Length: 182
Image (cartoon, rainbow, N blue to C red; front, side):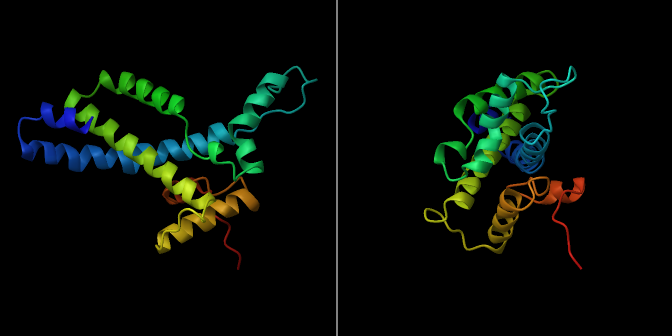
């Protein structure tokens, strides 16, 4: 997608401008916001668990789907196939995203934005795997250690906070960062 964007730009200078703004926007804003929104509002959605109530959203299939999407990851968090996004999810995000933004963005910008979005999601998968499998990956950065600690607190202490995996910025903005004890 980055190559397509380069091809559609009239010069290297224009490509660098498109890259500097739109790729960064795709990674830093679009992906991190999608990561936060999906983790907090979709994967940790609260559903009514009483199937006998007429307003209840809980049913056998819905509960099974909800469990298999994310709660299973919290319960069995060291199963490698439950950590990374699957290819179907990537395809759905990209098809929906490109279709949505195709109407409002010109192609050189659209493909660069999508390139940043995909890069952010791949970075997310790598970091998330590293958090759960330190025997395979261990990154010597303070940022990495802080984010890993936050993610493990999310798993073990309070799964209603610290939804960010690649950044804590949205947790801070949305007020879901860790509780600070005096």
